[in-house]
Amino acid sequence: MNECKAVILGAAGATLSPDEETFFREHKPWGYILFARNIVDAEQVRALVGAMRHCTGHPNTPVFLDQEGGRVQRLRPPLAPNYPPAAAIGALYAQDQKTGLRAAWLLSRLHAFDLSKLGITADCLPVLDVPVQGAHDVIGDRAYGTQPKIVAALGQAAVAGLLAGGVLPVMKHVPGHGRATADTHLALPTVDASLEELRSRDFVPFKALADLGMAMTAHVIYSAIDPDLPSTTSQVVIEDIIRGEIGFDGLLMSDDVSMKALSGDFASRSRAILAAGCDIVLHCNGVMGEMEAVVAETPRLHGKSLDRANRAMAPVGIVDGAVEDSIRAEFAELMQLVA
Image (cartoon, rainbow, N blue to C red; front, top):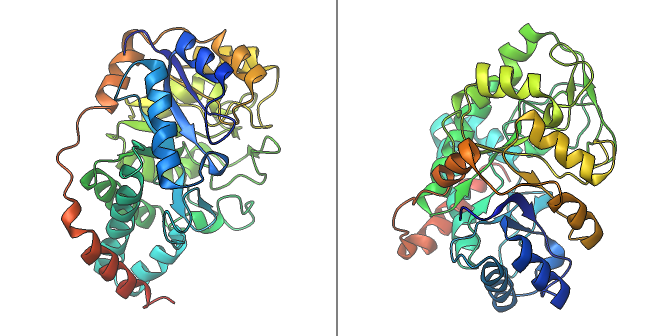
């Protein structure tokens, strides 16, 4: 996949238009991401995923999805049950740690069943943000809890569940979105916590899972580190904190480049993301004009970024589908404890 561009793109609808097919064949994005607008039924999703991969010419082109449970769940019935949010898993952990860890593993294993049936490669999970009182609820119950060690433990269990099902995890939103006082889809938040506070709380789960293959940035300014730029476009945050202090050396993708937390046109945003040290630009909404501006500024994957991409996509083992019914039954039984 050396000729692929350093970008993940979305499509506008449930099938690829002729213009999208031409565009994807020409530019060969490294990966794709699906949203609810792209999902009708199982046969259609499998066909869409196949068409996307056909355009890039690689049967293993990664396809991503946000499937957390709760508010952020792109697959809905009948393709997948309505799963609980991470906070429900955290509540179970508060009752009994062993049971909570098992539930976190089971939920991710169920996500892996649901995604792999459709040809989807990666889940943008776990959410490792640690909310604080007064923060915007854009994270809220998407977090496992408000204690960093608990978030780390449940995040590790979730990762294990995904990998057991052959689906790759993407931890988010590094180096931490839990203190943000605005929704980054709409505005750019500034976090004024000291570096000591960030180290003792926000960075902890990411350091615990620093050996993962992929991570997504936060469009958040941390004034104690870089008072001018959000982490996604801050070379200081990426080099000194994410790569340095946290120790993450996997594939680093931006959060969605079309979110309003970022400023400038799409070309300048894309240049800034890559110049800061992200390996991949993520563009989600499938708007052709925006994608054209993004890919014009994204090179082919090369060097360390290509090495990280190849490591991230390393095989994760044989998937055993025979245990699906028992896992669903066990998870349902555990969740009755917090119903």
